[in-house]
Image (cartoon, rainbow, N blue to C red; front, side):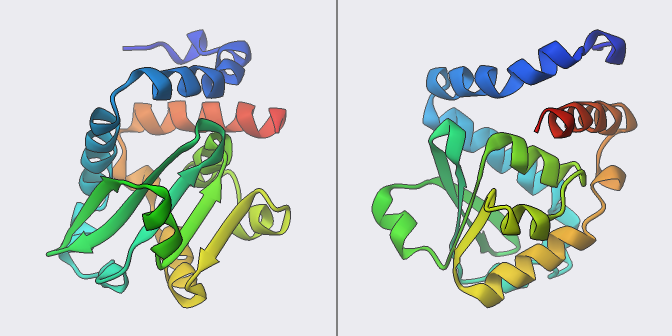
Length: 167
């Protein structure tokens, strides 16, 4: 297991560039498969309990701007379906959420407020405003710390604090 003390600010600041290289090297289907596994494991109970039903028959495109990477997300039969996305699908999506990898990481770590990022023009939501608000409110109420192993949560918090300070 990785020692938290070994994760230095210098290493953390290099993560976005490393992520860009990884994005170029990993096959798209592997990336989509990994994202699908993580999201479905993280939100399993919420999908089963109907808390994500507002995504039914909707397409949300997530765009990681500094990676030039995007994927679409739909809810089908109480399961999140993740797929690759092209420009036509991006234009036809009900909602498009765009941010840098660092800003998405800060959001997932509860180290950044989506409203603040939005008003700083670091996060954008294009399309169905109501769907965007439902998604934002769900994510605001989501307790990531309770869903992750303690060590992973602690590592995520350390990385997020350094990224936030570098911001």
